[in-house]
Image 1 (tube, rainbow, N blue to C red):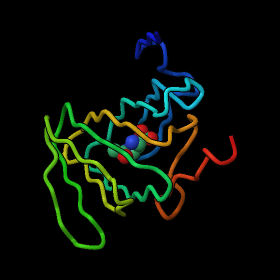
Image 2 (cartoon, rainbow, N blue to C red):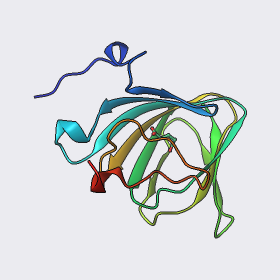
Image 3 (spheres, protein in one colour):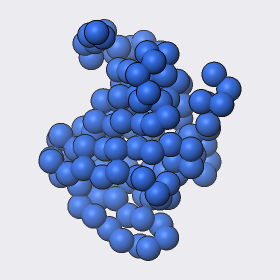
Length: 130
Ligand code: 9YT
């Protein structure tokens, strides 16, 4: 069994901060369970272009409000506590935090821990090189 406490990840290399989000990675590829598990804060008043070309991501909002907009279809969905979205079609999207949002994010294949988005909003396929 694996037991982790968020406070033990804060300020470590598994606490990744960017201008628009801060991701605390609680479970990673190295844990060998087939997915990674992140407690992520989306910063208030931000917009992030994201495209998980190589991953499926499930996102569950537990605090805050915002919006996701799909680039191809222009569909927009409000995000609030209790909302789940799953990017099972590698949808390119804009993620907007109206207030700070706290999101529980699960990735398959698992992230290795250091991923940030490139200029296209893509996470590299680290599963191939690690
Ligand atoms: C919800 C979302 O995709 N935010 C970007 C960061 C990502 N979830 C991560 O690495 O935790």
